[in-house]
Image (spheres, rainbow, N blue to C red):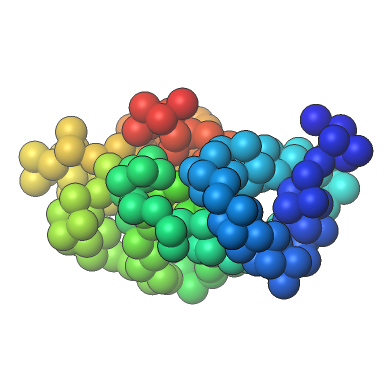
Length: 213
């Protein structure tokens, strides 16, 4: 899709104009358009364009944050008029692992996951493995997503998978790991189900893991 083919709502999201995106999302509802169709046909393609711009270094981290906030605001308007069951891709528990206070990357991924139809429970930072697991059991999560932004906290991701296995819970949850120092090789080494280098990769992998794509 070229820039000229974008809808006004998509242009607002890509231009991180939150007020305009919210206004346009409400206008879609006021004219009787199915909100699930707006999410599928406008918000998700906008996510793909933003991710592509980031990968091509046309957008940088601040742009990604702003676009994520704008998309989340528009999605909240649309989802307020439909039941979660109509759009729900799956339930995710996400957080930054114990010993790590970084949350920018995790917050961006959370915003885009929510905008893509996931019910996301953000645990914040410095989350120990047992807290991830307890929350996943409480909300009947499909996916546990653990972020590590420092190389010294990466072993906590391994600990999470080990404890799930020890408790006989490994088959109940798909586990995604991410963060700047992590790699696809690391994810494979510790037995994780998914890893994403960019926000778009993370959303796509989450959809694959729940069979939504």
